[in-house]
Structure formats: C-alpha cells, structure tokens
Image 1 (tube, rainbow, N blue to C red):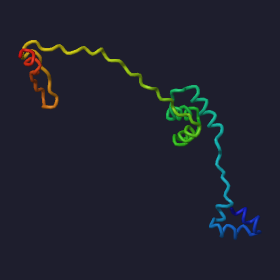
Image 2 (tube, rainbow, N blue to C red):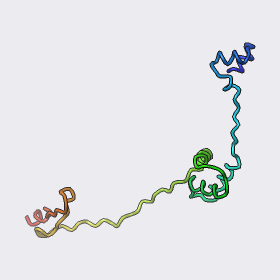
Image 3 (tube, helix red, strand yellow):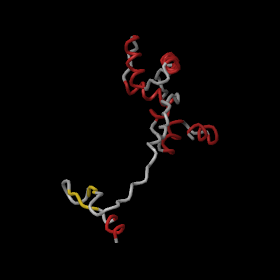
Image 4 (cartoon, rainbow, N blue to C red):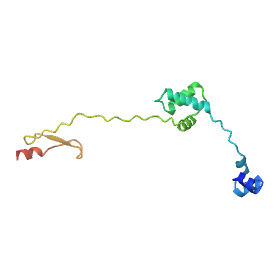
Length: 133
C-alpha cells in the first residue's frame, strides 16, 4: 500500500506510512530467521525411516544426533511438513457366538443378578413361573 502511494501520488515514504497508519519500522522490517532447511530434510528422513515414530521420539533422535532443537520447533516443523502419524484403525473383534439362554423348566431353577439393586442381590426369574402355569 505504501509503495503504491509513493509511486502513484509521488509521496515520500514517511508521509505514505503516516497516511496508512503503519509504523516505518514495520515497513522496513525484513525477516532474518533461518528457514532451517537442513533440519527439515533430516526430520523427513527420520520420519520416513521410522514411520511409527511421532514428533516426540523424533525429537529425542535429533537431540541424540546433536541438533540444538527443542520439542516445540520439532512439532512446528513436523506439522508444516505434514508428517502426522498414521493412526491405525481398530479392527472389530468378533466375540463368541451368542447362545440363547435356556428356559427354566421348573420354578426357582434359574437365578439372575440384578446390578441396579445394590450389592449382590439375587432374584428368581419369572420365566419358570410362566412355564409351569
């Protein structure tokens, strides 16, 4: 915006920054941070070699190799490179085949536990009473 104002209206940069409401130090600021390409390449190599390792274990391997990084930087690079751990889908286990409950042939033959009534109360099922009539 400042560059446009300077070119189009032949304004000085100070006045253009003031009109836009931008600090001149912000206008002149240039980022000096290292892109850390070597660390990115090494992180990709380790993640490719050890597929089941997450960013925490990869951080430990990098520290053992002598890289001066903390876990937050490794996590940020891990996310930026889309190296997220592939989650295993849980397989549904088939339980034992269900067998129908045998019907009681006489009163007081079949007992069941009532879990809602408190500690270990047993009661007779009414199915035997229905069978005997």
